[in-house]
Amino acid sequence: MVHFIALYQLAKEVDDAKIDELMRTSRSMLLRIQEVHNVRSGKRIDPKMDYPFSIAMDFENLDKLAMFREDPLWLKFQRDHLESATTQALELIYETEPGKNLKYS
Image (cartoon, rainbow, N blue to C red; front, side, top):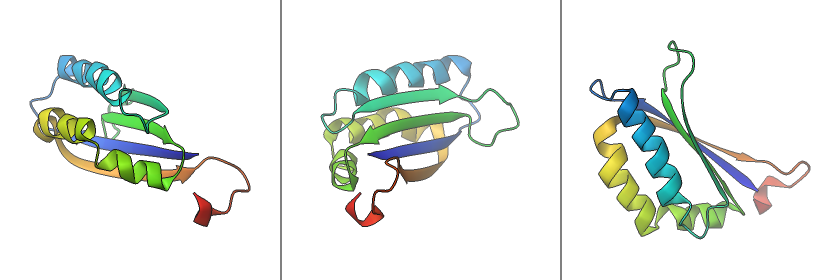
């Protein structure tokens, strides 16, 4: 299982209400994508953190993650919601199955 985490820095004009909207919208839109097994989105608790918004998802393997990146719903979510609200993103990808050879992820 591949765990994908995206951390986002937000534009200055993004307030708490907009972050809450991003959380709701990300969950409702991204769960409709067949390759996505789980969606979690959240806002920072510690105001010193550099990335106030995050999205985390699980995928069966890296091929499914690649398919997700080309999915029209993901592209629409990026275009309609992330591009206007974020200034920078950091993406992290992890294998969550112990002992699994990473070349088979």
